[in-house]
Image 1 (tube, rainbow, N blue to C red):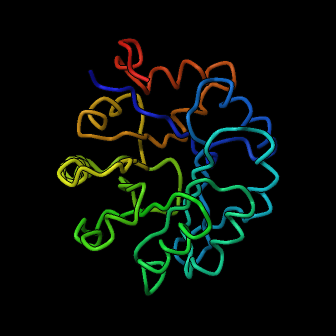
Image 2 (spheres, rainbow, N blue to C red):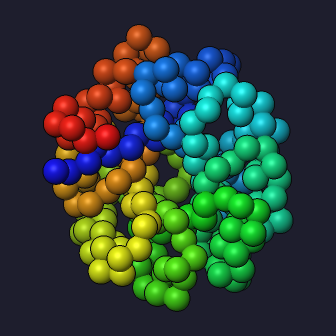
Length: 227
């Protein structure tokens, strides 16, 4: 029986004037992770938040903090985000010269290590680091902004990643980030995703709508014994 996917609301779509309240609200609404996008205006064309904000949010939720570093260089800041409360730290292969070193740094700090692949980044970059990662994030938009439309071609990449993970017999989560909504969530799950990052689709309608938004994203598996 297919397990229901985990839902990781992206706080990029939350009300930044009351982030703590928003994090508490999606936690109470049944989210599984809190997805935190870190952007530097250099690696991607936008600026968001730093470790101080992550630390300020940490007391507001016991959930896994899924921290996505869209910054370069990343290694200099990984310890600060870990200290701030990150549970998963995800980097891009392009954000530093030595991906393996970045992953080893994250693991040495006792946290789970993820790799995010941009739309044009092939799965082959993972060939020699599969044993060092806990999460693969397939970017289904070009990183840098929330609210973008899902790139349909990402579905075949998700399926290919699922096949490689399963063939290796590894415990690696497959996350999809970008343009996930009620219209495409089912096919993203069918392609093999374990974790759905959803910003606008989670935070639309205000706090009273969050629980239903999350249930809708999870789909039928949420009502058939999946967890």
